[in-house]
Image 1: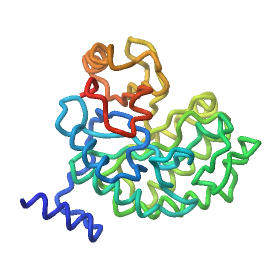
Image 2: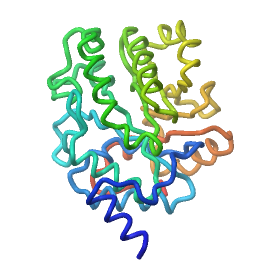
Image 3: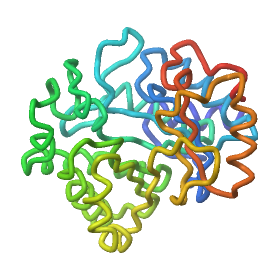
Length: 273
């Protein structure tokens, strides 16, 4: 009863009663739309299932998810968190699951999807580099400021498979800003085509505590500290148990992505739990 009351207070007033600090060791499922579901009850149900499973203590989700799916809302604007997304973050935290908030939809820009990308308020620019200009950088800094209340309870992923080297310095600037305004938890990058550019500034990224978690599809441990299976379509409900056993036995933190977790409007398939 006490937890129920605290959860309701958190939901009604945006308070932080009873929330645990962000986990220090990530064991995450990447449920791409979790924080932008229209159906808030789905958020609570899925977060509760994750919390009851021995495999997960956190969830990675994209709040900059392009529109075009009838079961999601816009998670953010260029400089503000949407109220429905904020509610979903609170519901996730109420179940003692740490959100790993993926703030930018670099992947959509890389693929030049035509749907609206919330962080820029329009379709992907024709030139990928235009997604990383100074004007957007300043808007993004303003956006990050609106997450301050959640800083002790979340981790942040700065990019998701960007397709241009310009993303490397952009992520560095965002990381520096977050540290300057008091964010102390994990900052994660998945550089993709920006790997070489990110490698060139690795020492600067390291100085800000940025953690690499590149998409990795082999069945042996990756070089990065976080084993991230983002984009690995070979993992599915029939073989995920073996994958999880292998990943967990490696001793690495992990973010488990599969196609069915990336697009699951009606709940997490039971095989993953």
